[in-house]
Amino acid sequence: MRRLVVGCLMMAGFMSANQVAAQGQSLLDYTVRKLNDDTTINLGQEYSGKVLLVVNTASKCAFTGQYEGLEALHAKYKDQGFAVLGFPSGDFGNQEYREEGQVQDFCRTTYGVKFPMFAKSHVRGESADPFWKHLISESGTSPKWNFYKYLIGRDGQVIDSFASYTGPESSGIINQVEAALATELPSS
Image (cartoon, rainbow, N blue to C red; front, top):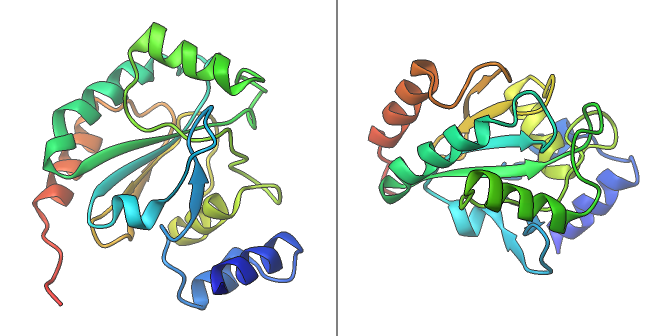
């Protein structure tokens, strides 16, 4: 109930993402809808204790070829507690298909994407979805373009962010993913 009230207050403009973070809401305590599906999941329940690479994606961008590297990264480390989470967005140059079915078909047939993809999202500015507002607040940086990446540790804290031109196969991303996977959560 609290999350619903906070979400409504944020949408109505009464609370900022900083105020929500200050009230202790976990970065992953958001319910999102799967791409081209009515099914919703709570990110915290689904991905708690995992290392995540959150990416705002677009199907018609010069960086779209990164889907291949993102899928390879996801496949390589998923059994170790890692996941790539894709959030299609048309916020930059309107470079995403209008219909989610088109996004899903494109990702699967062109790049064989199997990593989790979620509903089209607004990822910047005042219209950013609540999860993205909180992610921006916690990381201190907003996406500058499509395929901006955020690495989140097992503890749900942002470790780092990566510019669009930093590919998923870069040593910078791989080294940090491997280091985060080697880190255990403290026992409670």
